[in-house]
Image (cartoon, rainbow, N blue to C red; front, side, top):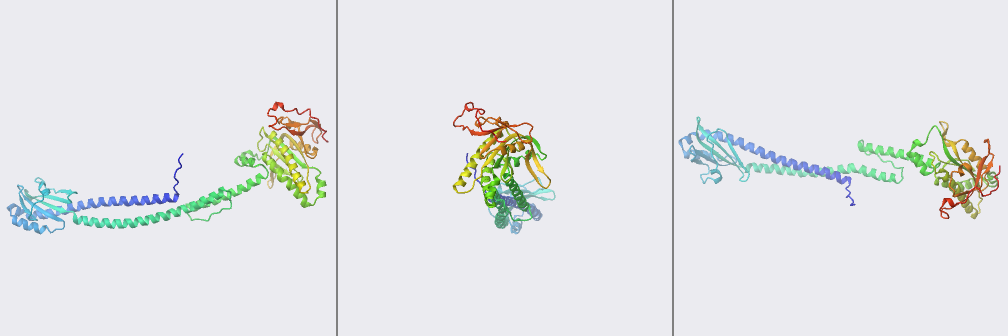
Length: 478
């Protein structure tokens, strides 16, 4: 596909405005020529009529008497009129009675037929020969006695036309120069703010929300700049909200929430969720052994890795409780793959904890050990709090059960409820479920230990995975 030639807005406005000016000048010149030709014809026709009327009264008697000498004297006198080249007088029978030039009558004049039956003026114009011929019948009383024909030259009028044309062209050239200059400055005036807006938009596209443009004027361009500044302000505000939201949920989930605000139900709804708790074992002993600065450093070091893992698996961090945190999968919308995703996240969290501990040991720094508990079930999802402070979170029995299960986990241990085990694929290896009494429940909960994970490359067939239940395990502490 051929790329289209890009023409800048400045050039478009300049060409358009210049073309309009040039077209206006050409049209004006054409109208001027037409008007001058029409007016010259009208003037010549009126002058011819008046000239012939006057002359016909003077030569009527000499024509009647066929007094050629008197007729020629009269014609010589009238031939000095501007533009008159020749005057011819014909008798009643068409014979030539007078010629102002006393010479050979031009051939084109000889071909003119004198009118014999009308008082009206006959006026003829020839562009090729540049002449105007006017003829009139001379009457004595009511009897036609001859004709008078006048040959007018266009030269005096053409000279005037030439002067007018030269003046128009001079004014037109000056006008075109001023028009081009005006078009240039108009194009610059219109395109400069647009270019500034374009550069600002490109910076905005790259994530620079600190842009603020100065006002260009009190017109539509000024309104456009004001709208742009308002838009940047709103985008900056939304960017801050999005960055704040990403601190609690994954980036993908944050984008889904921003694009679909209706996903967040302000009143709270009951829906299925997967809740994961991770907590540092023996945290009290650890805080007694370390300074406050070391405690904060070790928490930030682990959380920096662990929270990134949760976000990677589209989880949401709802609570960070000093030595532990709660992650939720399935808000604001629960999907069938969330149980599997939560298990993948728990496995990745354990690996991240081991990696972080290994790095700290290599530096001679103290390490922490985590226990993890996971459960799936119905929870109340929504904004909880007051008008002054609200938090989008999950509450309910599912959260309580997940928290109780997490407290039973030993260091580096992942405990999973039987409800969740039944919802994940056979790639995960679990111990057989053990009944564990939990506070707040009428009957013991079935809890399994996550023992391992079958990689897809080692066994692509789900049917060949080993069964979960026959794997023995140590009892879960109550």
